Amino acid sequence: MKTQKIYDNGYQWIVLGRDPDKPEKIIDTNQYIIKDGNRTMMLDPGGIEIFSSVLAATLSETSVNNITDLFASHQDPDIISSLGLWNEILPDLTLHAPAIWEGFLRHFSGGDVNYNAIQDKGGSIKLDSVELQFIPAHYLHASANFHVYDPKAKILMSGDVGAALEGPGAPMFVDDFNSHKEKMHMFHKRWMPSNEAKMDWIRRVRDMDIDMMAPQHGRIFKGDDVKRFLDWFEALDVGVAIHGG
Ligand SMILES: [Fe+2]
Ligand SMILES: [Fe+2]
Image 1 (cartoon, rainbow, N blue to C red):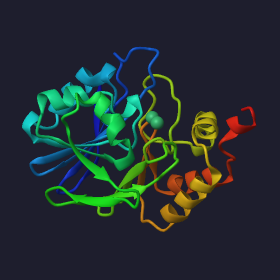
Image 2 (image 1 turned 60 degrees about the vertical axis):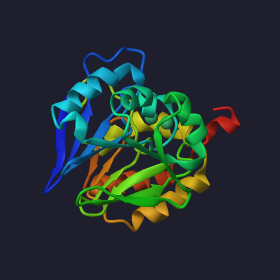
Image 3 (image 1 turned 90 degrees about the vertical axis):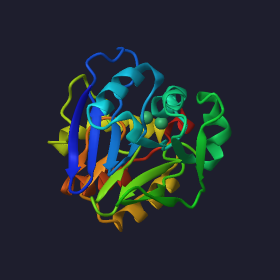
Image 4 (image 1 turned 30 degrees about the vertical axis):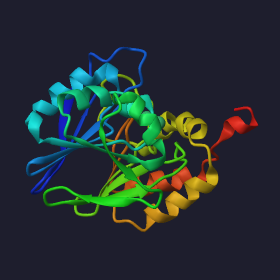
């Protein structure tokens, strides 16, 4: 699994992904690490199937005892079915995840994980030097769902929003927004259920200062491509299965 630093100024953001050993039939995922002093937080650390690759890649960046926090944007298996394995090697770590998914996510953990239940209005967490915000993104696509915003690095980790279905080994950054649109089209139309939730999120995100939007699948948006994404998403009608697809 490849690792790539996307921010490095006193602390680091690192993306892990594009695993050539990934089983073919599982969806490709991006995992993110924020390494800040002797605290390391993993954002959407991934499924049980890729745990050993993610762990090996993580240990090339930080020591095992520095992995102190996990974040799960929502309850999907590609986000966090690895929870029980992380908890087994690091019983003191804390999972930060939506409050209403606690009873569900504990099915992945063996039941005894330290669980910081993020309430619907969101919240924040201070690592060593950086303070991160949990931004509500409910119904995009899960009924309780959060993104992570770092106002210093100006990075928004956007979970499944901005996801694209890519072939193996795709570049890590969007290089041509126009050709990228078709890789996002079906995913957003079908997995995002609510135009009202979409518009509420877009309104709030337009007010944020964002250099990079980093989704859990596909490629990272930089600079003007963030605004291009917001415009594209705003114009897209979602929740299409209600009308038969
Ligand atoms: Fe999901
Ligand atoms: Fe996902």
